[in-house]
Image 1 (cartoon, rainbow, N blue to C red):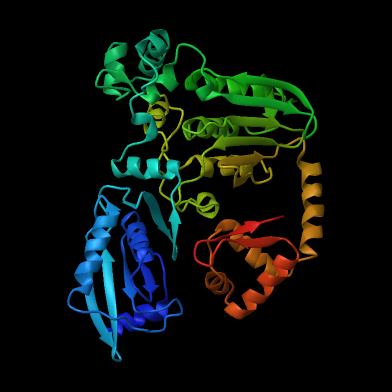
Image 2 (image 1 turned 60 degrees about the vertical axis):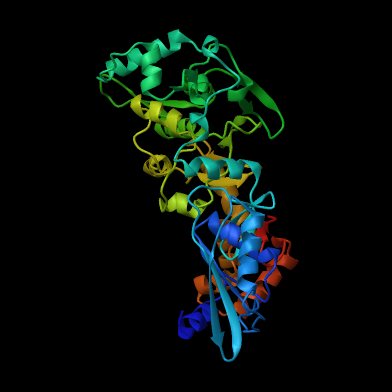
Length: 456
């Protein structure tokens, strides 16, 4: 490797595929593990965090000993490439690992992934997702060890087949053949998707809590659904329609026009997204709360790591369904058009009706969408305006820039915020301190592994 290339990398600093270390240690192996579980990368030994060349001591056995230790402490064993580079009389060792084809790789029983310029230990659900993505599959594709064909309703499968035939699908198979062709059964056993779609009896696995709230704590009406996923779509929509208003517009024509408080197409899209993309491996339930001024849809399961709220709103992402088999059946039924367009259509429906833009956020290990309707639009806008004015009166433009940046990306660095605002990093640091004093944001964790938290 040319010295000029190394100096250029040092100037650019650490990132998604570059790490600096002064000496070889377990931390180097952890970083290589994180690279192997992400997109690959290189560790430069003999450079400190500030990008200063400190050099490292090596002999003819050093590199082989390091590579042996990396191999012994990782499972499956990873074998990186190494290269010695001498710059200004100082020795630098570059250790490079490619993205591992079968993930995840562990180091001493722990699993890590690279996010920006730091390593993050994976949770059990993240480990599972990484493994499934490696084999281009999903959680609902696995065999359901807890249920058999006795738990599956042949009648419900028959109704689905008949519906597909009505949509001009050439379904000629019987129930079992249909399930096999759709990969809903494998090796003679039902998959998790098969059970969730066609379960015979109710199950806590599909619980959706529905509530009509008079206040934040007073519930006027409630319902609990625990049936199959295909039935839940219509049942959730029926409960919502029961508790939102409908205006009859007299047009002078033979047939009058019905105008609902919320665009029904958007509500249906939200319900479908909630049921199709829910993380059914988590113990928490989906929740729909209907208030006077809004409806909140909460679903267990965070967004994929490569998708932020900003990317979601700008359609700047590639959609990978959490539950591929469930999504495929809903697509065949004509309930969804194609992956990744649901949020865009929801936003468009509300825009066409001149209603407030829906809000999306990650909260309590899940994803929440909040929509505002026609009847509450005026009071909602006034309340938001008053709240925004009060908040903005305490913030200047730079503080607003910082607050927006960390709300979109909790791992964003001061340098990246500075680049967004075309300002110096020192200036950004000063205003971050101001927001911290006002108890609006805070930074949790170490400089490399921490993240921003919005307090209010």
